[in-house]
Amino acid sequence: KYVYGSWKEDFKWPPCTDVEPFGHTGNIEDETRALLLEFDVDHGEFPASVLEESQQVVASGQYTHGSESGWRPTPDMYVGRRDYRKQRIFTIDPTTAKDLDDALHITDLGGGVVEIGVHIADVSYFVAPESAIDVEAQRRCTTVYLVDRTIPMLPRPLCEVACSLNENVERLAFSCVWRMNKDGTIVKDHKVWYGRTVIKSCARLDYATAQNIIEKKVAFGENEIDECLWPTSRRPTGGHTIDEVAADVRLMNEIAQARRRLRFQSGAIALNAVKLTFKLENDGETPLMCEPYPIRDSNKLVEEYMLLANYLVAQRLITHAGARALLRHHEPPLYDGLEQAAALAKEAIGFHIDISSSESLQRSLNRLGRECQDEITLMCVTELLKTPMRPANYIAAGQIEESKWAHFALHIPYYTHFTSPIRRYADVIVHRLLQATLDGEEAVEDFPLDDVRIDSICGNCNEKKDGSRKAQERSDEVFLALYLRRFPMKKQLGVVLSIGVKTFTVFIPKLGVSSVLYLEEHQNWIEYEPYEVPNIGNRIKLKRTQRHKGEQWQDLLIKNFCKIRVTCTCSDKPPLKVKLELEGPWVAPNESN
Image (tube, rainbow, N blue to C red):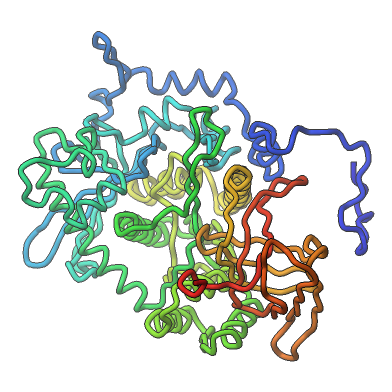
């Protein structure tokens, strides 16, 4: 129990009474239950009414032939849909993905023009407004992805079966089809087509396979396809060939790269957080491997077409749904924090970052990338600039002035989320609104939600999405700490990002994470003296007071961007987290001999 207002400035923790033990630190089930509760995404099991209804809505399409069973659309579901079943469509997703909600096609029309199709699972067909499934999905708002489990927004019969755009089976989709030039621009005199469709994905590619195709490691004239580079289970079916799909992937990548260059030249910025990936033991909870998830050209390929589809759908909503348009806006960063990050970069590496606009910021980052040969420094500047960035949020267009619809990071005047309705409730509303705009003005006027109600739903989506993100980050932290308990990482490069009085924050490039180093934990062999440099900030003088693990250094000055050597291990007291132990100044491996 906590009495509001009783947490005083000189109290480290809020004063609470009647505290009950919750579980054991380091126990995965207890840690997971705690983080779900802490961030208000403890969805629990689906109510019986929701499970029953989910079975009912897919029942007509279920079939069984001998040992084979599955789901396919019934003839009445095809009515009013454009038929793309013979189109060469495929998905590109993480290797372990089960809820495939987006698929792509490309058709070369000649003359430097292509047709692009983004096909999204038609979740709103199955989830009727105010149904039991809809009410529960609106409560959850998002799928929560943790290291060892996924907590879905929709019941399994929908998210992994009827809605998932699995390969070699017919599925209902909501599609956005447009024409592009090969230089990455949109063909302006051709209307974008939006509508409900039926598709049949010919291949279930993962990012690794798509990357092998892009890099021409596979499907490039060889007589036999290497199973490791393109597994048989991910090869095309339905009369489509390996060479055709490979050519599509390479053409998509070529245009996506051109589109990406145009976006960044126009002022878009990318300050992506590092995502860790884990490999677990057979028990499903003991981490065996941990490393940053690689972002490859295949990831960027998918991202470019999803961004464009979302932008085009936002355009349609604004022009045809007006105040009801559900948008995703991104406010400019907190200026003071951005100014502080720029000042640190100037002081530490002598580089001027222009923070007057997203275009100038991107130009500065591009110039830094060209002029700075130290990849670690680039990572650290990016890490610093992430801190003052505000999160993107969902809004109803009618509840905020038009000048604030813009998306700062993407540097576009409007944006929405259309491409992931299996895992985001906001996308379900966007699908319903988009269909209303296609049905006509009367359908928009009769839409059951006004902009006030849509904005209220947006507020809940924002809270749950933020909670889901924090839960995912905490899950990563728990598993990383457990990994480091088993496999401490000694002699790791750390870069100081910010400095307090008794602590400083250290970025670990190998893991892509930042953690706090506490000098009080080193008092048995280090003396420290903090001081402030006017217009620059804090610094700390360190002095080794006695022998410690063979260290030879005597004095060390901790300042921003200085490189140090640390051991990454696990905290020995609750809460479970990464613990950093200072070893000394950084010495590059080739300098240590």
